[in-house]
Amino acid sequence: MVTPNYQRVADDLREQIKSGALGPGDQLPSIRQLQTRYGVGNNAVHMAIVILKSEGLVYGHQGKGVFVTDSK
Image (cartoon, rainbow, N blue to C red; front, side):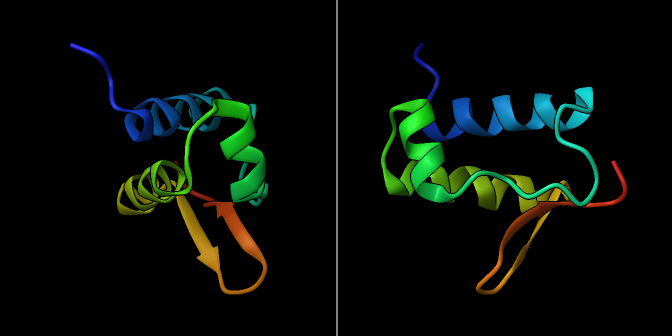
């Protein structure tokens, strides 16, 4: 079974957060940068961010971006 694009993006970002490559307060790359990095569309990036938000790993700040939360 092929992993959906949104899950692949979420899994990779989650691993970067858990490994410390992305630390508390760090801003995630822009949606456009994530699209380019992973070769996916806008919807896949949005769905990945929704997953990470639901897990409490990131939060969005309107007009500023998406950031890693302080607690893992």
